[in-house]
Length: 321
Image (cartoon, rainbow, N blue to C red):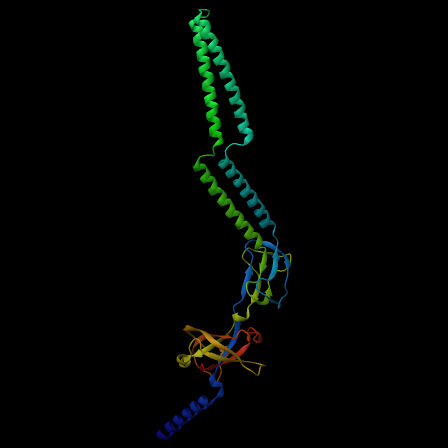
């Protein structure tokens, strides 16, 4: 029994040494994936024109898709007219009555002054007649009362003219100023909405997929086109639990791809803190670890163009220089 146990111990030890000398043990298995950018439109509109093709490389700010803009353009015109109307009302409140309206009051005031002068002359004649006992005291009082009324009318029109020449009360002006500002903000929003009918590239990237074609109506918020920037390409790898302590974020890596002799350089940028079990796709006789941690390696941007999405990869951890 001792001899058999010794043979088993030696056999297990030999397997361990073989696995340590296995050149594949320095690699971590994985595959490439990416974080796509999905571009959509805020409203439910038809695709009016596609300005790029699938697979085409585009620059930041380049127009990609033109959406139908009738709704946004109509809203823009309404907002502009409303803003102009509110501004005109504010100007009217600040400047007082219009000249034509003031001219009417001027004419009424002039007639009132003329009537007051006639009443004054009439009273002066009645005073002389009353002194010679030609008219009665009642007729003199009537003439005096008529002059008083004519003067009051002149005074009333003078005050009306002064009020009409003044702007409205400050509270009314402040309220209208707020309405003008609100209308301006609505106009700015309408301008921005109309500009969104053109979908542009937020970054330099490659057109990954065109989801809606010309003439199709995309629901509000639904992706119309997707982009793949090179910096969004990543290699997803799985670190055995025993090697986790030797791998840290920021470490440099070499990424070996099928069909490419030279590796692609990169670095580890994320390690999942939660463990998971080995998926069957990376299970092999050389790697029987059950407990693993998912990590992501980011290839250098200049070399990311050589990586296709879903491509198997081997990643080698290298020490930082």
